[in-house]
Length: 637
Image (cartoon, rainbow, N blue to C red; front, side):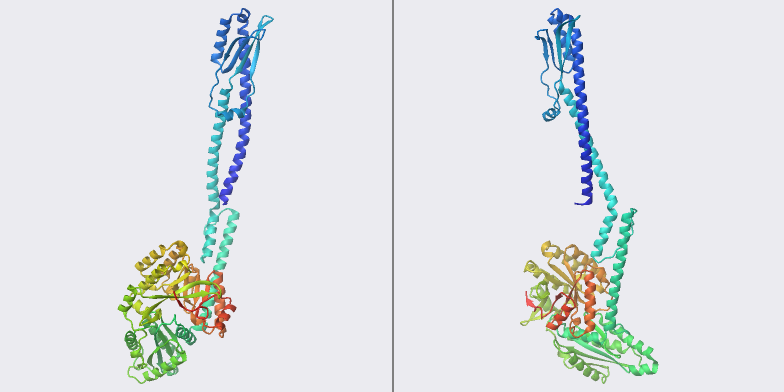
């Protein structure tokens, strides 16, 4: 029961006690008053009539007596008038018929009027000649008492109603600061940290409000310190301080995770960019000039390849940069490389002591990073002998990850040929949900999304795939059987029409099933398009749909979205798990990250778990949920 209801019940109880007491006192006093009035009226009438009947009764003049009795009876409120002689015989009698009054019978019975027959002697001189008996009609007094009690009850009901309204308004005004404090507490639960600016004047509420504000500031400061410490750890371990790009350790972890995971694998190419003569430039012109050249090359690499989705750039040594370009179309990649080479060769003046060489080679699933780097180094050696300072590995011109084009992919989407697979997120015993993957059948083989999603994004088909996956999940009634997580591309998220269509489809799902659905967004999308993501996520929150962020922990931007978005879970990038059993830096980072997430009530999920050693190490770090071939294979839906 709310405080308002309790106060209302209390006020009503007090008013009821007052009403009952007042009613009983008033009822008793008025009843006694009417009884006295009726008795007095009957006695006065009997006395007066006794004096008037003295001569007529002595002479036995009945007509005279009758006229006198009727005159009195007709103008008074009497129930009975009797005139008796000395032998107690009735000479004259008048009786009023039973009157139906306003008061109900139960009220009349409740009053219980006492008998009110008054008498007076009729005297002739000193001699008694008879007796007059008079009784008042109690129905009139009963009606008057009923009307009085009814009015009293009505006035009290009105008074009670007005009192309740006043109490309600007063409590609402009094508790308004508590309502704001409740909203503030709920916002903290949603990982928001608002400061209450309206301080109530009531001393008790003022102290509570100020204490809440202090707590919010402290929690916010602690959370920001945790985020800063995580960012510092990540930067010290994986970021090149000169260019802000990933370092060699970061690159090798990303490469290992990419080459060893079937579902996360995206076909493509690796590019090595070497600044030849950098050491001589540092010696002759100073390290500042050398650093300037390195930053210029790094900036060009990032600005050119940012047009291609899922491209990673890292500085793997003092003069070498490595790029992973996730692209399935060889001809498109070669055109990009030629354009990139023209731009980067124009960076340095012709009289510069430095030259830039570029090598490109394709990578394959389950290829070792050492083999890939060795192949790229050999191609780089060949590039230094070429006039254009660029070379491709011999297998690139004939390399095709999957032989499909945009028309083939569009036809597969239109004909609903895409196949759904699922992999559990589990703690080893129970399942949190199943993550849905999509595959494309080509010549009897199902290719994972990495083989055709870059093509779909380039030709504007990605949102159709998102919609098809959702439609298929609903058509197969998968949500009725298990909790499901769907990945969403930025093509659906950033386009207003596509986003509206997708949300419209989600709203059609019954709420009981919507609560079993999770939507996952890539962390890079969240950081790059925060405003659009926030608007979309807020709408998902209203629909009771869980929100997850995928591939967390590999980007160098601050993770401020954690206290701004209602995120339910975070999925660590597989590169953080690859050698977790042997890497203490990773263990420390993941442990600290998991503790920070717990303070925000966010679940952390480890991905690409391939061995018992990895899972044991993660359990020792108090991670509950995991995903990978060791815990559960990818199975057709």
